[in-house]
Length: 123
Image 1 (cartoon, rainbow, N blue to C red):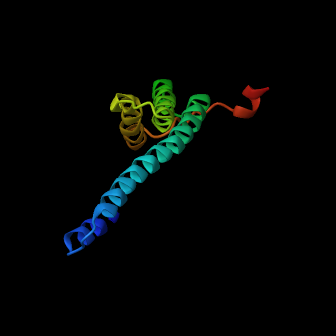
Image 2 (image 1 turned 90 degrees about the vertical axis):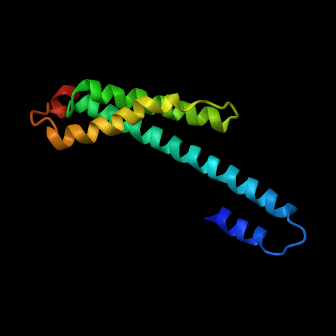
Image 3 (image 1 turned 45 degrees about the horizontal axis):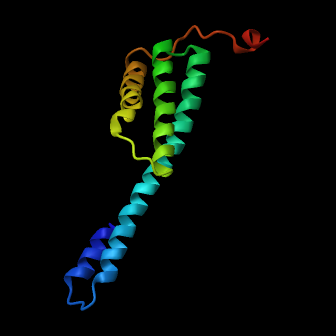
């Protein structure tokens, strides 16, 4: 949206457009940073979800482990990018698989109805 506004300003009869190039590059950089910060929060929340799914056995353990591994890789990738170490998109694959498999599993099978009593197993 912001780049559209900048490009419309650029297309008008403005004599000095150098600031528009700078503004456009700043907007693109902000977009990249905001994406990686959002992936940090998704990774941490996904780890907590995967951990609770693993502990409660509400879904098969392999789905929960896939969510945990994917979340850790997502968090690590985003943290590395924010620190200046560019990483590829291959680290998104496990969390992508989890985000496709988990809802399909819930739609077809649902949660495990025979959940263990967490109170007695924690003692």
